[in-house]
Amino acid sequence: MIRLKRAYEQPSRSDGLRILVERLWPRGVTKEKAALDLWLKDVAPTPGLRKWFSHDPAKWKQFEQRYWKELNARPAAVALLRQKIKKGTVTLIYAAHDEEHNGALALKEFLEDGKG
Image (cartoon, rainbow, N blue to C red; front, top):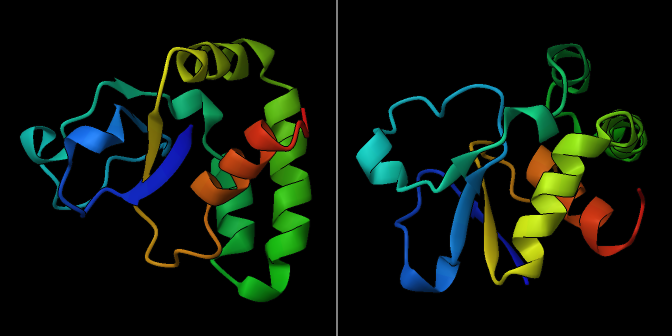
């Protein structure tokens, strides 16, 4: 099972393995508060793609397509994430304010719908 949670939300036992899927550390969050098990920078969108997207919902579908292409170019990082998911519940931790248009959501869809 793959769950999503903002880095600013309280961790819970039901989160399972907590994996940060951002290239940058969430502003204002301590390591203790984040309670992460793993930080996988390599599955986050590249800085160029993040900058281009700029959290513009009008670019969402195109962002997903470009991001999935990036993920397909990083098979080792994606394989490591898939391996963790097979072991139990994984919560992808992200920092974006927009809960409907963010890299973690696109990553979850990539993993669940076999985009890669």
